[in-house]
Amino acid sequence: MVTDSNEGIIRMYWSLISDQKWNESKKLFHSEFCAEWPQSRERFTDVDSFINMNSAYPGNHKVEIIKLLSSENKVTSAVFIYADTGQKAFATSFFELKNEKIIKLTEFWGEPYEAPEWRSKYSQRY
Image (cartoon, rainbow, N blue to C red; front, side):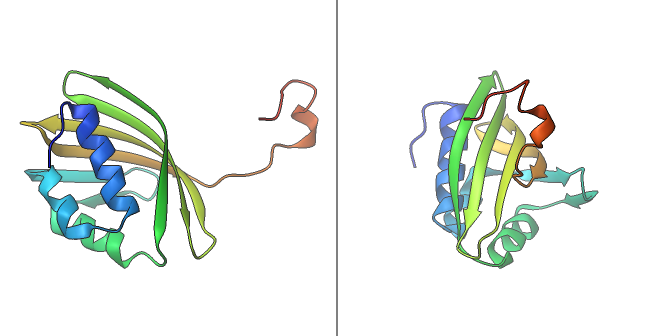
């Protein structure tokens, strides 16, 4: 697995998650990895717990990267995830890397929704 930057590592991560290549994705994580989901106040304190939870999630998921921002040892991604179960979600993920491995991940999840009619005079649909 060849990556040329921290951003490349995160692109590889999302590609492996999208393809449900769980064991392969584990190679991208630092041995001291920890993930937090502030909305549900969950903490995953090791790679196996985090990846096993993702692999047990109902349905097969595909990931579309919307945006990546990176600087030094940090990468932020915004992605759209949709499953064959009909579930759809956006994730904003804050990755920290150490020695070209993901050591810390903080993610915020949200479901898409239709804009309320009252805002239409202020915004444009895209």
